[in-house]
Length: 128
Image 1: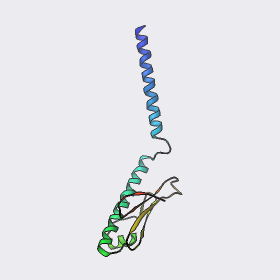
Image 2 (image 1 turned 180 degrees about the horizontal axis):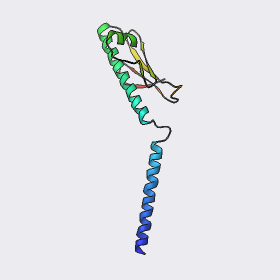
Image 3 (image 1 turned 90 degrees about the vertical axis):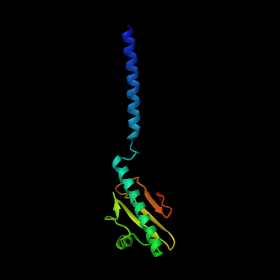
Image 4 (image 1 turned 135 degrees about the vertical axis):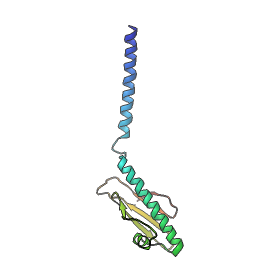
């Protein structure tokens, strides 16, 4: 009789552990969360934005003005083989005393994704 009670208690604990495990991982893989590949691509996009902004800032200090992405690359201030990553495209918006680099999201192929931007503050943030 005592063994039957211990066995029932063990089954209840196992059931609770199993349900907790199931609900925890069901939340972790809900459709609203990014896949590991999307996360890696997003980190790559953010790193590209930082590299472009650093090159733009250095170019601005040396030449007294900010330039487009193509001009940064052609001048040798930035080494990039592609002008985008994972469908994102990059654009630099300049004025006489500041710049903003924008990573445009491919909403046609990745619904729900976000644009990101960086400026001379060197902080990546979501962009409209």
